[in-house]
Image (cartoon, rainbow, N blue to C red; front, side):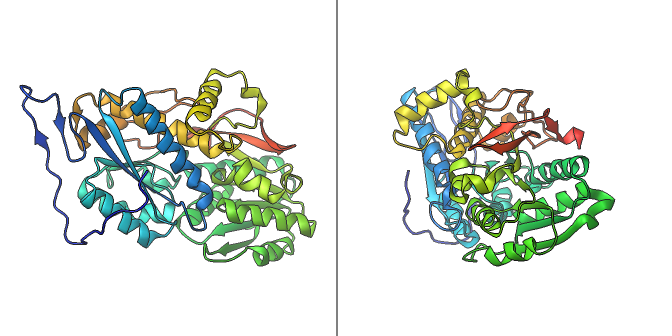
Length: 406
């Protein structure tokens, strides 16, 4: 993985050109970043900054592509995976993505992390006709092929997830009075709007909603305000650093509402452990991937394969961190998408193949959850199962809940 790059001249970018190679001396049809021997893939990830707990994603994806190369690559082509640190800063993301596309000449970008950061380069990718594939964010905007045909998400969208929580609260909590903490950007607002939509005419059950900025040192003051609001339900829409802070602070205050935590902060090591397991007991989230701390999966073949991969390619890494599960699963999907391209490695064909999965089984997805896409459906995953944090791990309960059931 390269973490520093040569300077980029920020001039007007040329439109990528498809290069047609004669079968007499070459084996395929290529766009920029792909050839007979290799494929360049770009990535941005917060190896530093407020969301640095997600650095494990980039490290694991780097290891995954090393494994792929050790096995001979994709249809005989080695992967050059270039992952750059954007610090979860949108201006930095713009700089890094332009560098990847215009200087490094990547074929596509894969699993770039964050809603505000990806938003900053959303139009750029589509203007340049460079795939922004399997975005590491659940914002609903990544599933809009009519207006943004070069962008596709991966995980269940935030709006659907939040609606599921709202419906569960209405069905299970007597006289709910709801407090909400959310990040003051597109990520937090997407969740919050979905949550209000799920409550429908009962949105006035939200007694208080407060925000935080990623530049804030803590969310202690917000947590104190929410605890004093009379709320007996607490929906936490926060990245791991701030989710851990508010869970820990609520525990110190003796405030014990029914807690719902957004999936992106469900990592046991990144959120629950720093918050203190006692302060997290009973918290509810939605999962779509197997959790490595849940011993019911110990005998599962996918989990065994993942653990063998971790032992060989990431020795010493904390295998309780669910981010490694996510990175492995999304990298597998990307690998299979590239394989489907065969020897036609054009950006248009890559998007065509990404939009042609039907109930595809990706390792480590929960039973009953598969990947389906189409030219008009850019939401690969649209289902979760609810889980409750119990004695240091997530315990699943209930059936699979999908966008069709909300």
